[in-house]
Image (cartoon, rainbow, N blue to C red; front, side, top):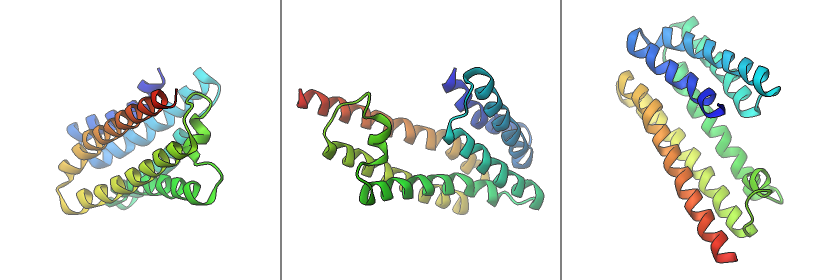
Length: 177
């Protein structure tokens, strides 16, 4: 159920963009993101920090897109989110005792600190790469291509990175046994 709730806003945005335009799609994105947070609260009695952060950025950048009738605002949203994730991961990599990814997953996954640092660094670079790539696509290519890239391209890159990380973790867990 959580996966469906997480995917609902992006696919709603895509559908409304296809049938209307980026401004109607932005309105639908704000509404569905807010509704998703509400459903999280009703079903799970909590709202994930990432979902709340995502809703806030969607509300801000979506509203700016609508108010100023300028699609550049919504195009920058994912770049800013990914940049923030990247910075947080880099900070945890170099200035904290444990990388942030390790803090979230170490209860369930037992691998050495060295591997956690590598995974954390990989994800920091991944988010940095995706944020830069998004800006390139948003600024240099037509809007329709950006929407497809945002929905399918970034989703594919995320899936691929999760797959690579999972394979790496499984390999390292087997190696450490």
